[in-house]
Image (cartoon, rainbow, N blue to C red; front, side):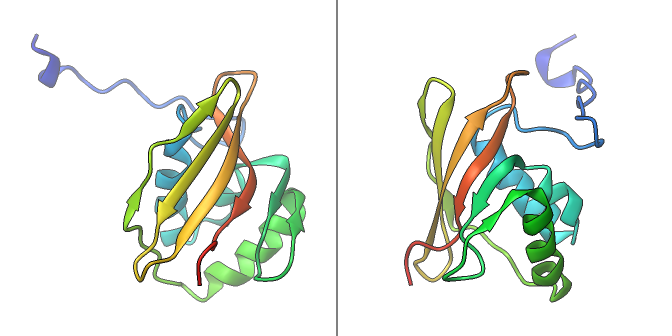
Length: 131
């Protein structure tokens, strides 16, 4: 069988049923998919339990409970989320820097940490570094 006809392997899921990111750049892809679908729990699963999110602007949101509350409110408004292109991750051991250009000239920057199972989760997320 040729490579392009091979059946796709089933996705491995975490303990909550979400496919984890196997590479740091996968976090942004999953974020856009899950946030666009209004899937708060799926978005929270992208973060380490002790993660820090710089959102809403001017505030720090820490840990899954606070991140869940912020995204519950934010995604209830059904925002239109788009990417103008993701930058290649910069990886140093178990830490990675990820960033995405946003339409209109903004950008995001995040720090991801490799988990013990080899998957990645964000530990620091700055959703807007440029006005």
